[in-house]
Structures are given as C-alpha cells and as structure tokens.
Length: 155
Image (cartoon, rainbow, N blue to C red; front, side, top):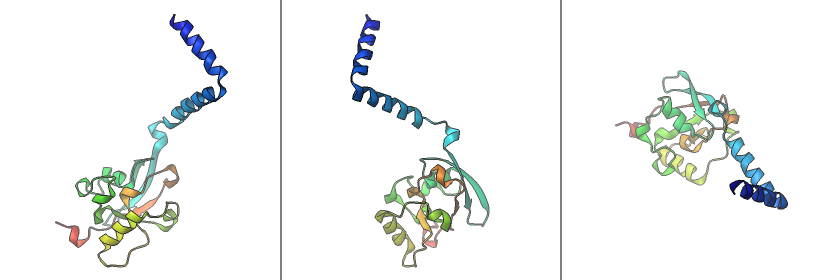
C-alpha cells in the first residue's frame, strides 16, 4: 500500500515540472548550506591593546564580536552579543583599510552608536562595531585592532 502511494506521488511530481524543479531546488539548497564546519572557518588576526598580534578563529556567519569574545579579547559580560542596542565602547574595533573596503557600509544605527560612544571626539573612519561585522570566507586573513577600554568604561 505504502509503495504504491509513493509511486503515484512520484509520477504526479514528474508530471508537474514547476513542482519537481522546486523540490529539486529546495533539496540542493539544503545540501549546499550544510557545509562542514571546517569549510566555514575564517581565520583573522587581532592586535590586542598591548600591541600583540593574535590569531582569531571564527565561523562564517558569526559576528566578529563573538569570535573576539571566544578567544578572550573582549569580555562577554560587556555586551549582549549581536544586539546593537547593548553596545558599549568595548564593542568597537578598528579595521585595516584594505579590509574595511570589503565590508558593507555602516548602518545608520551603527553610525549612531559609534558617534555616541566617541563622546565628542572625532570618529575614526576605521571604527566598526564588532557585533555588526559578519564573518565570511572573503574576510579570511582580516586584521583588526581591539582598542584599549575607554576611561568611562573602566569600572
């Protein structure tokens, strides 16, 4: 009974070309998005506040902030990861010019938070919020600097 039902459905699917192409497209999209973790690894370099260059490993689709937090460069308690409303000055990173050009421009919200955190100082054009930078394979080898905490952020 079950086999005959499956056979009937299969013939009906092949009769409807739009439906069969949709099913094939969905299944191939699912297969392509389920990459191995090793294929999603993005290695970049961070300059810590002491000037030491450290390798940071993140995953494509993950925020830069999460990758920096996972390697201990940013205190996780200072930020509710991925939420721009919770940004502090500790979320701010400086990105090397050649990598800055590969990122999408700042959003209005990101610009607002950076200006608010600058406290009247001139805004650095290399500044980005780590929670708003999404890692991708194109950012392999990116260099970022984690600035010293601002005096008003030190407890």
